[in-house]
Length: 192
Image (cartoon, rainbow, N blue to C red):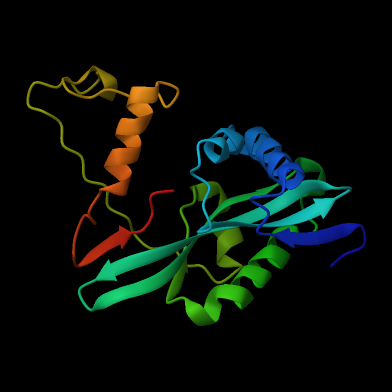
């Protein structure tokens, strides 16, 4: 590793690193992972691989260990996510270093790696061996729906508030008891 940088991983139970990771995620993506952790959702299947600089997380590639159900059985996949670098540390190869580590560690035990990305970073991921594949999104709009109406206005659709204890328990019940969308291709054990 380059001078002044240190590689760390799997620090879910290290409050200092976890909070530093959450601050970086809040700065880069506007996501608060600490609240997710406090609610018990950060389990052993979500693993951060990060770079420290002066005891602060400055770059990260997280992975979700996924069990994919296919028509030929269950396979292991790795979903990469929360790929981020603090703006002062960009352009130094930190993300490449992290992807190299992740692929080395999980490549032999996984059938494939995947991630979701917006167009602005397609070229970045191509440098690490990822290739773009088409994605389909299917939506159902009730016949009475007006196209310009926000989804929350549709009858029966409500955004759940995880700070409401009843709605939080409902959400947990729905995710834990969920079945794969298909026996030909679906995800299991992904409550987190």
